[in-house]
Image 1 (tube, helix red, strand yellow):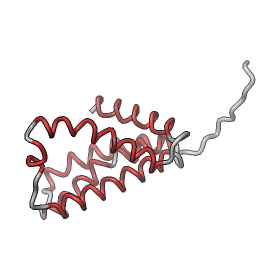
Image 2 (cartoon, helix red, strand yellow; image 1 turned 90 degrees about the vertical axis):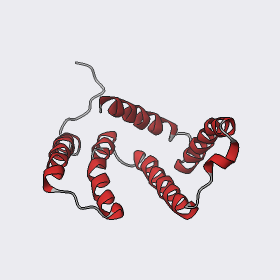
Image 3 (cartoon, helix red, strand yellow; image 1 turned 180 degrees about the horizontal axis):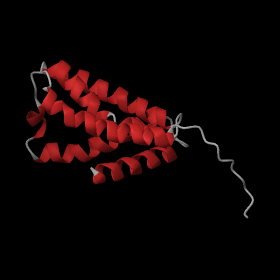
Amino acid sequence: MSGWLALMLVMVVAGREVMRELSAFQLMELRSSIGFCFLLPVILLNGGLSIVKTKRLPWHAARNLTHYGAQLGWFYALTLIPIGQVVTIEFTMVIWAAILAAMFLGGRPANVKSAPLGADARRFTKFPARINTAPSTVKASSRSP
């Protein structure tokens, strides 16, 4: 969890810095191009395009478009809201994963299994929200004491 948090914070800061020069769409295209360049040699060394054939192409396309749109929105949000709120929203990912898994996989989470999820979600989302979303009462000053 701490590794994920550290990498997420690095990505948040790097994304915000890059967004000063590029639009969200340009950043996503650059990210996709770099990812393609990294994956192409792996695919070619393991048998070519025959290893990526699928009978579920429409499902993969829908998933990829959804993922692309979500990441595009995430990078755009970096320019609109404070980093603290972005990280706070990221911690709700566990809740969304449970809800969407139940919807798409047709399962119903048992109370015993979902109780720890709720406890973790409350611990990670409410505490940072109290710190990061409260209006600031501290006045910034450029003078040193």
